Amino acid sequence: MYLDESGDHSLRVVDPAYPVFVLAGVVIDAAYVRHVVRPELEELKRAFFTDGRIVLHTSDLIRNRNGFERMKDPAFRGRFLEALNAAMRRWSFTVVACAVRKDHHARKYGTAAIDPYMLSLEVVAERFCYELRQRGIVGADIIAEARGRPLDRILERSWQDLLVNGTRYVGRRELSDRVRRLELRTKTAGDAGLELADLVVSPIGRHVIGKPPREDWAIVSEKLRRRDGSWYGAGLVVLPG
Image (tube, rainbow, N blue to C red; front, side, top):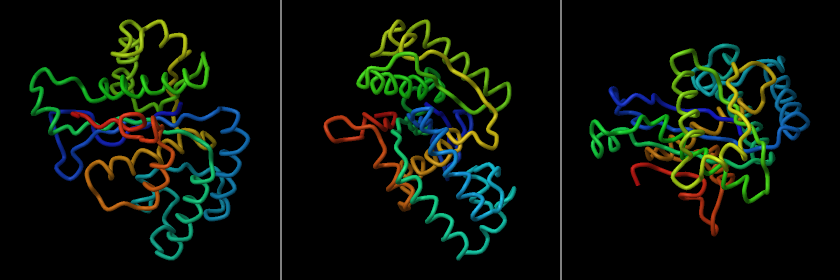
């Protein structure tokens, strides 16, 4: 599973325009990433930007920077997003995610409020284990983007806490059996799994705060893990409930 987040996890500062923290995981076979997603994504980037090694960051796509300056042209932008959305719809992957409404969370729990990163990691790891259990898989990996020592330490500490205590519904033994390791990587060219996770997480955040839906949310919502036909609570958990 490849992890990425959207928004600031801090409860001290809440942006009224984006008062959520979202952690999303893309559950996907590593061989499928190597043999299908990575070459197709590099071909797409070469077709539009002549450089298959350019790294996809949603923030750069939105702000037309760091190699994506051509996105300022509305016609070009439309063609690229259409091709990218078609690829995402075609690829086979499952999404599990947790969104924490920070303002509601802080109001409800006050000084006892759990850090949104720790809270959402527990939920996402739990849903990942459910998916692995359903598929009969043990020894899977979680790959997250390295964000610098302060944020990396929070993630590493949160993960170690889960290994010691388990989650509310998944015991520590099953968690350690199902998930072999958590690895932090700097997002670089060719790490298509992390690039895909980056593309998935922002549409979820926009949906949770009630922004008008775009094509990317339609695609992501189709990929969310389901239970009895519904993704709410199974693929996407929004807290407080």
